[in-house]
Length: 240
Image (cartoon, rainbow, N blue to C red; front, side, top):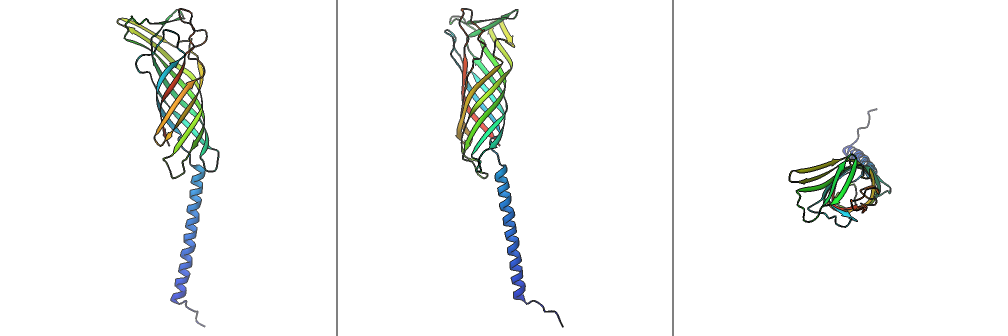
């Protein structure tokens, strides 16, 4: 008995069913991939910011002059804590350079440091304090991002622990040059709170130091304490 040969209609029906199964399988694979991507995507893991540095609680007679700038960059590990990944905790490691142009002259002799406000009637070419920190930021994050949307609102706030890696003060007036490196009157460890918020590329940034730049033992020549802290304001930029 000869085998029955499928007619064209049956062949078409079988092909249509096969194509439908392939389409469903492809959709399942795509949906699975999207879900995997949703589970893996992270935001804003590299940062860079530029700041204007303001000295707070300055002793009488101490003032800032010119523009005191800061530059900061680092890496933060983004760790989402909800299924939509709009809330997250982040922790990381960074570097911070802070420059303060002011009239507090710093000198050193035999390991003893002295601090004096430069009088207004004394001309000088340069007087600044440069501080280099290694930083450990820890922050709480809220954002409106999705796996497909890279333009979103964000509000990040946290605390930052800083270790003073290097310091140098410079005073220059004509032929007189006074350089002081590794000032031991400076606090090696500092901590402060910060906020970064904005939309897409442009984000406002502010940091306030919660402990002084100098140790409590550091005094000016007139006996005034150097309880100065810092307020840094500027722009924050995030990548990846």
